[in-house]
Image (cartoon, rainbow, N blue to C red; front, top):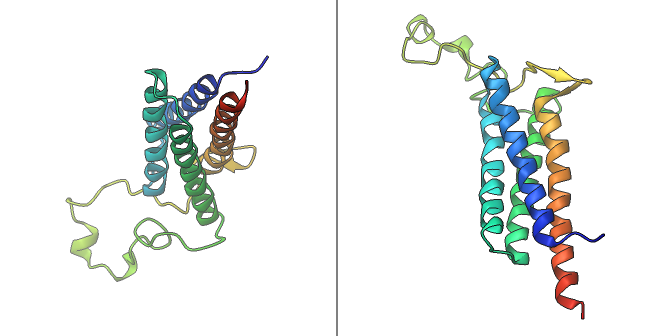
Length: 163
């Protein structure tokens, strides 16, 4: 049975909703997100919004393409974050390594109460499953979601050319 393009797109948007909900769940359990973790959430939010547009009837290939772009963006951010965690490349200096050159900070700066108390570094893995971090899982699952959006694009193309 062939699925309609909008059904595939809604499945993809639901995948983003589940991943974003999972991130919030882990945060509720006490796993504070780092800066790069937060970056990965925004494209999921966009994909969910696009899914809502599909739900209310905006069902065009261009809309599905935007959903695919959002999912691909969070997958790319997840892979970038994974590389930072595994020391394949440098991450942002504001949340990795020495976290903004803490070694050169004054005692007043280090003891400041205006700075966050629980700084979460982007290059430290705080949770993993099957040796993969949350960023890695986000990257992999977001690629699956991207494939769903692409399948919606393909299905929309077929339904327009079918007689």
